[in-house]
Length: 226
Image 1 (tube, rainbow, N blue to C red):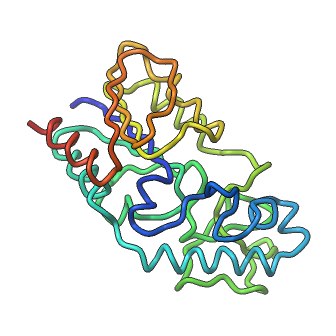
Image 2: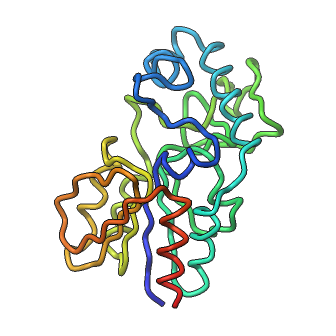
């Protein structure tokens, strides 16, 4: 069975109504990134940061997978599919994809604020101040902030290096280290890019599909399943 590696970004979740991580004005849901997505922000004002991610989690739980998410799950009928996502939502899983690697964490889990590898399921949409991990530290969203390590990046790079087919969806290839993953894919492997704005990629064997995810991904999957 051929191994298909899919890298997804904010563009696929945007069509389910979730705001992209950094809008054109540099803000995320009206907040400066530096105020809600850095360890320093947590140090300064943990209540603000906690509330911000509680609201984002509520939005994620209210959102539903779209046609692109479901199409990728259908691809499992014929291929060994692993999705590497930069997104912190769980829409791929809810659509039925079995193998999902979250580069930047997943907002539906909490984590220790002193040991990132200690994560827990969340009952409902809210993490309350005063809720603590087994080490006694405050729980926070299981999300990788700017300035923090990306623990799954080596796993993702290894998966990309073994791809028989590579699909890039809804990402501008602007956020590192995730943007560099395409360079781990063997040059001879066919690569599809599905995005209205095709990013520049210094890799050969690229097939460009300049469509939004809900249009381009079902088209591509239908072709691959023939």
